[in-house]
Amino acid sequence: MGYKLWDFFKELQRDYELVDLTHPLDNDSPYWAGIPEGSVELCKTCFDWGNPMLDCLIQTFKFPGQFGTHIDFPGHFIKNAPLSESYGAKNMIYPLCIIDISEKVAADVHYAVTAEDIKAYEKIFGEIPDGAFVALYSGWARHWPDMNKISGIAEDGSENFPGWSLDALKYIYETRNAAANGHETLDTDASKLAAEAGDLVCERYLLSKGKLQVEVMTNLDKVAPAGAIVFVSWANIKGATGLPARVIAVTPRR
Image (cartoon, rainbow, N blue to C red):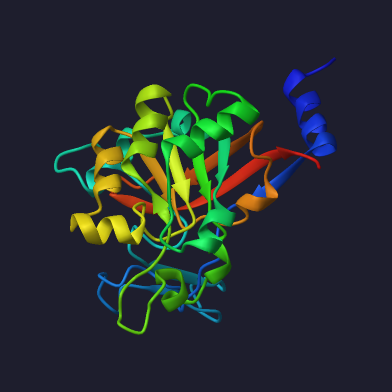
């Protein structure tokens, strides 16, 4: 007797690679500077070996929703917008498109991807498919886990890092019907654009559209620019504005 999904699983093992797009976390991992100190306490023992009730180990975990590689829900920036309980298994798998701006970022740390960059990608790989996850590869993941480098802290204390522009996000969401976007940086908006606007305009825009995003991704350079799929999973916690996520890409073997 044959089972199609089991046969497909064998095909996945043979012809595809699984790439983890998630940074590991510990008590020293960086997070957004606006979050109060003491917000992270991982692997604290609350039930230790040698307990006469049961010989086992149990830990507690304390962290902000926006910690490490994480997913943001609309209610993170939009009052009364949907939170984690509004999204489930059907929101955890997408066609994956990766826009590579790493060379432009190497020349200009403030570079913000444009709609023209995405159109150039489409000329090579075809149109972004309906319901896609569009990720921005800037090479920024190499700075993990150094908080100052991830934030691009200069001598004057300013932040300097690449990101999205509003016209690029409008293109993937309004011209193409993408479902989510992602990037390697702590914020959606390129730092220069955020400073000029006095707000995270790009992040506010995409969350106002009811879209999802994953921040602080890694290993995007190990995935095919087109043709891969991505799984985004998170704990089933109600009322969350964001949660650490485990993000796995399935990509053709190179």
